[in-house]
Image (tube, rainbow, N blue to C red; front, side, top):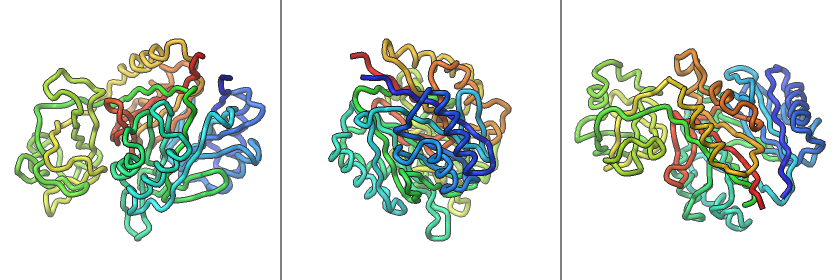
Length: 405
C-alpha cells in the first residue's frame, strides 16, 4: 500500500476561524499534503466549534472527513498547552479504503446502548476484526439534567463487547472541555454534536502500536472492596472505605482532598508475580462522600470482591524515553507515519502540582521520528493484556505504521 502522508498543525490564536486556518495550513505544509482526505481535530472549550470547523474547512476543502472534539489542551512535536486557546489538527492524505468513521448518539444515561449501537455499525462494515486499529472518542460529561454527571467508559465498552466480544486493538478517550468539567462538542464531518461516541478505524494494512505510560506504582499489599454500588466504593476490608484509605495514607491527607489524588490499582495479571506496569489499571477517586464515608470513583470498575493496591504517583519521567524507544523498536520494519498521544489532563504540570510536563518527555523521545498530535483527556482507554480497559492517570502513545507487504 502507499504510505499515508500526514502533517500536524498547532495554534494558540484566539480567533476560532483564524486558528482553524492557521493550524490546517501548517499541517498541510508540514506533511506535504496537497489534498486532505481525513482531519483529526482537537481544541479547548475556549473556541467556537462552528467557527473553528469553518476555518479548517476553508483550507482542507469540503470533502475531507473530519472528526474530533473539545479537550483540555493539545500538543504537537514541539508545542503544547492547555487551559487557553490551544488547538491541534492532523491532516491525512490517505486512501478512502484505508479508514472509516462511525458515530452513535444519545450517550447520556445510555452508555451501554450507545456502545452496542456503535459496535453493530463496526460489525456491519467489517471493521470489528482484531487486526483493525480503532480509536474511540466519546463525551465524558453529561449536564443535561442541570447537574454534572460522568458518562462511564465501563458500560460503553461493555455495550461494544455485546457486538464485538473480543475488544482488542482499540484505544480511546473520554473528552472534556476543561478541568471544570465543561462538556465537549464533537465534530463529525460537518455535524457538531454532543453526547456522542465516535469511532475512527483503519484498514488491516495499517498497524497501531501502543505504549502505556502510567507513572504510578503500588504501595503495600492487597485490599478487597467488600461493598460497592456503581462508582461508589462503600466498604474496604469490611470497613468504611474512607477510613481505610485514611489509614493507608497515614493521615497525611484530609479525606476532603482525596479527589484526583487517591488512586487504586487493579492487577489484571498474576497477583504474586513481580510488579509489571502493563498489567495494572489505575482507578482514580473523583470525590468523597464524607457523610457516608464512601469513595466515589471515576468509573464503576471496583465492584464488590475486587482486589486492589494503593498506588503512588511517580513524577520522575525518565522512564518515558525508554518506553518510547521500545515502541519504535517493536514496529520492526514497519514505517511509522503518525504518533497520537492521549494524556490524562491530571498529568499536566499545573494540575499535577509539578514543574515538569510528561508530554515534553514524550516530545523529546519521539525526536521528530513521526508527526505527533496529542490532547489532554478525561478518561483514557487502552490495552491491558490485549483487552481495551478504561484507565486513569495514564498517557497512551499510539504509533501508527504501514505494514510491509
